[in-house]
Image (tube, rainbow, N blue to C red; front, side):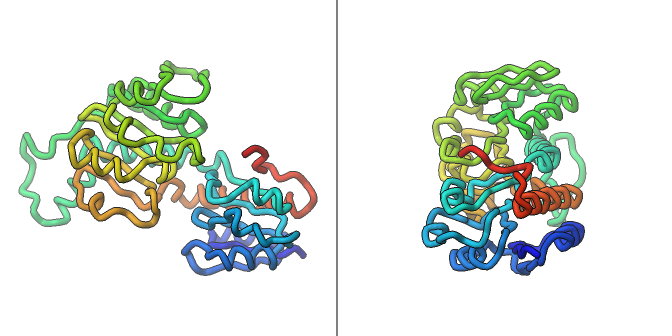
Length: 320
């Protein structure tokens, strides 16, 4: 029986399914693997199920001469923490879990849009503090979401799911920036330049994949182009946004606020962001629904099963 390594605890349903096919070892810690642990995993197991933070870099593979491991079945759609080319050169396939995360991540994007516009985080803190003095006509006035304009950066599965929620749920105008035009069953407007999009919307939502082309794509220039009453929403990856530039824009009131589910140096969050009332901070909840995590896990297990059975995994990363 093939031997596989799960680098984090996973839902019981996923573990039970994995044990139908493999001898399974589960790491109980929740922190990312260290470089020595990753090298050991490549040498000791036929397959590894890693996730966000397990940085299988070129350095990890450098001394991996014909590793026992034949597949890294990533738990998650994003795989920027894995050097796919280095893995391939070492004879290791890489897979991910697309599709399973789409609706849950889009829901979190809407959560952040609503929380930012209606000052929900600030309001909850006020109630919990015991200092709320009761309703009054000018208390904590926020912004309407219905009928506003949303700008989506990256119109893949998640971007389109956000767009549908905004259009059909809140009657919002949808504009987007993407490498190619998308054909949808509702009205959208493609904007050719990111800065131009930023200048036209009330909410700028990041849903792009993380790679060398998207790192820090939201910096001082784009933030300066946004309207002073607009919000930045990030449910992509933390390094898509340059946090230093975002903090500066918030401190200078160049934008109204931000809703963040991911961070540039996750799990570290700058203290200055924690102290800002106009920033909503979530602990990477994008896929944190039990049904979603089970679906992701089962997809990863199927990728492992196929790869270690001599089949092409359903979700192999073919291009880098």
